[in-house]
Length: 230
Image (cartoon, rainbow, N blue to C red; front, side, top):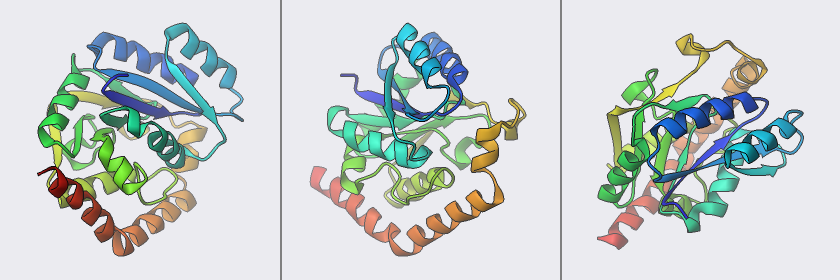
C-alpha cells in the first residue's frame, strides 16, 4: 500500500483520466497511488475500464452519488489502509516533479493536517486539490463533513485546517486546475450541471448550515486527535 492515495471521482470524461495519468507519470516519484471512482450508470464506463486497465490505474465503480458523496464513500473505506488520502478532480494535472513526496513530507511534519499545492487558479486562497492525514477522515467519518454535492468542499478544508492551524500551502508545488474559469477548457455538461444556479445555491446552503451548526464540533474532534498525539 502506498502512503498516499489520491481519489479522483469522475463522470463522462475518461479522456481526462488519460490526460491526468500522463501528467502523473511525468511527475510522480512513486509516493502516491491513483484511484478513479466512476459511476455504474455512466455511459462512458467502458472507456473508463479500458483507460484504467491499460494504464494500471485502480478503478472503483459504484452507484451515482455525485462527486463529494462518492469521495466520502471511497475515503471512509480506504482511510484505514493509508497514512494520507487526497483529492484531485479529473481536471487537475500535477506539474511539479515529486509533488506527492512534498505532500507527504508536509503531512508527516504536521502529524495531523492538510496540505495543498498551487493550482494556478485559486492559489493559496482555496485548496481545490488537497491531501490530508487519514486520521482526519476517520475522526470526522468523512473527507468532506458537510454533505454538499460538489461545491464548497474546498472551503470546508480551508476552515478546518486553519481552525486547528494544521494546513500548509506549498506555492512551488503545482497541481494545475484545467478549469473553464481559467480559460483552459470549455464548459461541458458536467461543469454546467454542478455550476448551475440551483446546484450552487443548494451546496452553499448546506455549507452554511454546517458552518453554523457542526463546524465547532468537527474542529473539536480534530483538536482531540492532536492532543492525543502530543
